[in-house]
Length: 240
Image (cartoon, rainbow, N blue to C red; front, side):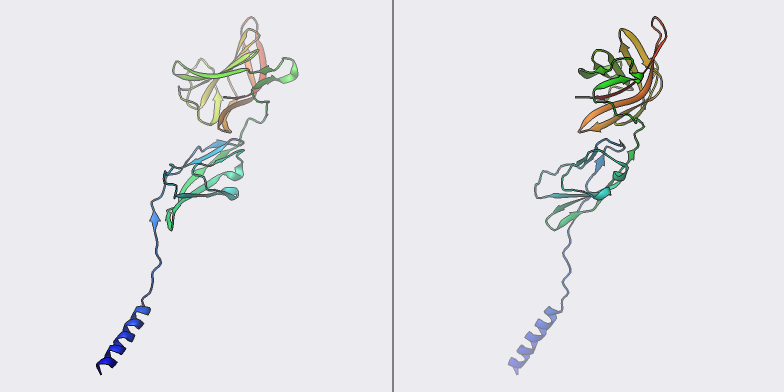
């Protein structure tokens, strides 16, 4: 009788054990910080970034518009277009553990600078004046402003609001002697010994291959030295 009871007890224990439901194992990592250089101008470079985790067992999974994907922690996308605007998402994984999805929104704005001068040159409308080839490009901080100089057979100077390197974007050209706002730039030209300045137009600042590029099209320069002169020029300058 005892043997029978023991047998039924063992069978019952096995049946109960087999009926226990196994829950899936889940492991959630904290979300990670994501940043970008939004907005970028069409044709510029998109930079996506997240703090690098030193532990090499972590992996990264970016996804985004236009079929974008990357396993790099800080990917870049060259030649930005409108199709690349939108939400970029990142998940970080370690083994079976996965972070909550982080999202950063990228804006791509049209570039109003429609011309495409040869890099590090300036040309003049009408072909009357010889173009400039810039052989020396450098920046400095003076009187609290950031200044970019491009020197060649003639020289131009771009003056930005403060001592910081200008962010990518569009800057309205304003009289260089006035107080500049954060979205404004002063633009001057030294041509054949004459000093010219511009008072209107737009300068675009883009990041191309991780180098700042400054460009403007058909900007009017005026000079009151000796006699009134007006020239119209277009330029593209990439800072080394």
